Length: 285
Ligand code: FES
Image (cartoon, rainbow, N blue to C red; front, side, top):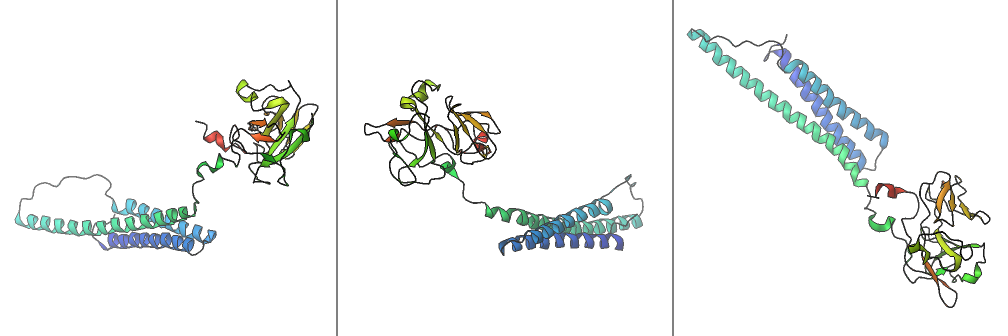
């Protein structure tokens, strides 16, 4: 049993205030370590001390300072001596309230320190990627070139052949790399709106695997399948490069193309979907 204003209560209050102060300093320390160059273990230690201080303080507060048990309303005083005692009680209670408000301020400081330790590392978040994950260098009217920057001509790719092309001006582009495949006339089974972008049996797909981003470099001509060497995802070239085996869950996006009179291969626009691993599952509405 503790006395509301007795030495035990005051000692507990001082201990709680000390814990909250330690938590405040630990939270600010964690933020300072991060701003000084970040040291993960030290930041974690500061955060642990901050959370531990707040938790221990709240436990002590609830155990020793909050009222518990049965309460009875005292009967009305009947003598002047009792009135005097009541006045003393009120004054003592006001003193207790003042100390409790001090504890509330200490707790607010500790929570602010914790907030600093947690929020300041958010400064490390880079700029939002915006449309960069959806756009590639490919634009309507852009020629397809080889790694040497020379235009690729349809005649360079015989039936059953395959070459890797890039947008003109971006040879070696990671997200613009494209497979141009000649499957022969009348073989493709694409939706009507995509057939116009695959003239004379030539079809172009992103070379970036939709599983984990490896270059899809193997072509099985007899089966008309593209195979990713990393985890063996297999894509049906005739049917819009839908995956037919392996872990990839999405087709390779198609690059709509035309063939100009001089034989050069020219893009009609960008890819039909985002290139690469399927983060777009989270954006597909
Ligand atoms: S990256 Fe292509 S199958 Fe895994």
